[in-house]
Length: 113
Ligand SMILES: [Zn+2]
Image 1: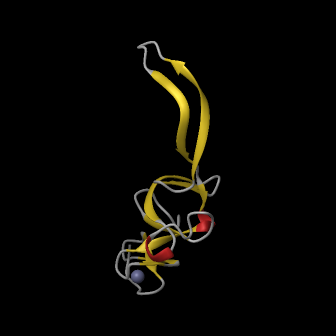
Image 2: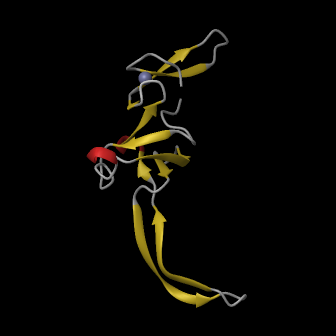
């Protein structure tokens, strides 16, 4: 069971975005994609690196390249999902519901999410 899923809101706990959010806490952002095999996730606006690419002209005559800001995947151990109920980064537990489905639960408040 994944701790972090696409469309989750996560808070950055470690790394350069761990103090870039409101009140000096880690940035909160939406998960765009999860790479379970690598244990990483792409998070909106987090771990942005500047890439310098050669400027080229496309066939339509537009310019591409130059300085580009690109999000790099962050390791899942550096982010924590934010519980919608208690609005805090939290550890995730797993509960098996009556249908046998696995449900993620917040270890702080016990709510499903
Ligand atoms: Zn909670």
